[in-house]
Image (cartoon, helix red, strand yellow):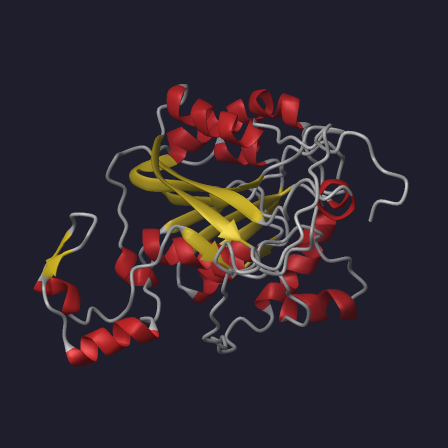
Length: 334
């Protein structure tokens, strides 16, 4: 596979290619990729330096990729797409391109939606500023959609690979025991509920702040005068799915690799990997990800919390809602 393709950079387990992934995928054997893990350019209303397609043109642009994704993916493999939403230009309403993409992939290209995930970035700034900070008619947009798709309804997977620590109340329950009974909802909670399974099964909400500031990648870029990729996802995001959906030795492809975060994770976890990126400068920085790859990853046990709705309802001053829904911007509005 890819023996006739010149690599930009090679490691023990993977290869970086400065190329259009559509051309590269033509040389990949059908059914040979176990996981496609990627964050493609989002369909934004404003152009970004890394290149992106406008939301209204996004589905047509993506179709050629979808066809190749389906062909090269193994029968029990997975396609995981991190994709952010966007707003309609000049309006406080959301564009539906990311949901239309999901429907297209399932209805036109025969993918199954194994599960929908949501990546919550706790460090996200209050945006879009006009609707959130100025007119105060929307709340902070801090979620990306993650579509986990598969050719089969039964892709290989295990949630035992991504368990989380038990809560304090669950630890107490495991310590003191639990009386099996029906809950008010009608669910029958058996005595199996009190077994210690090594950790808690996580929800499909993934909380990861995107706050990388002093990683080996950032240091490498700074020391070599390279501009870091402006839209990186945190390594914990691809690592979650690489761990859950692949075994050592499996092949992972990132067709929109950017700074090759997916490749760095796969190298550390002994997965084979292929990363494709069109812009060479991003790959120049990506090389830095593999300079300290054997360093031990420091895991912090951090819990992120969201306040229950209503915490401040009794102290809030409601005032009068704008009759026009905030369409007219007030002169002194802040």
